[in-house]
Amino acid sequence: MTFQEIINHRRSVRQYKDTPIDAERVKHCLELASLSPNSPKEKQPKRVKTWELYYGKVIPILYSRFFGILGIIRKILVSIVGLFRPITYQVSECDVRVVVHKTCALAAQTFMLAMANEGYDTCPMEGLDSKRVKRILKLPMGAQINMVISCGIRAEGGVWGDRMRVPFEEVYKRF
Image 1 (tube, helix red, strand yellow):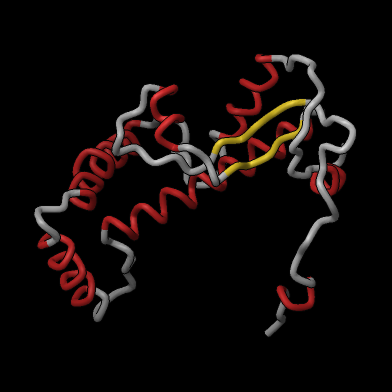
Image 2: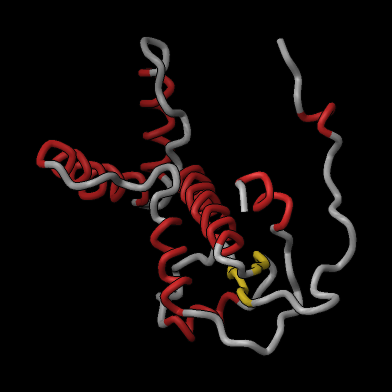
């Protein structure tokens, strides 16, 4: 399929045939998803040092709470620095959580398109029993589940209804 055909074919499928799917093809799609925007590139000495600094120092500071005092201090510092140069203002724990969820959503979309390219169907599920999912996957209770994606081969009646989208004219504005 062409990319446009993949986009048009991919739907949220809620009913699958009772047919096993190829684990290696799914693994390949997950590898492609890891190439989504915001994924680290190949390890190069200079980049490794940057990523170690970012994930080893910056992220722990962004996630630390200390009774909310650090969040207030971060907001004040960012506001001051922002007066003199462009800066990311999303520095609170909640802001970082939103950024992480967006990154996961980009990877999920890439995974679903890759699965469509392999001839499989998917359905992203946000409303789920996250406690049960964490228990099954042996994740810590503090972990957050962005979504679960079901996979399979579309059964007759697996797509429920027509696509509902905002009209393109309302989305696209040329300035």
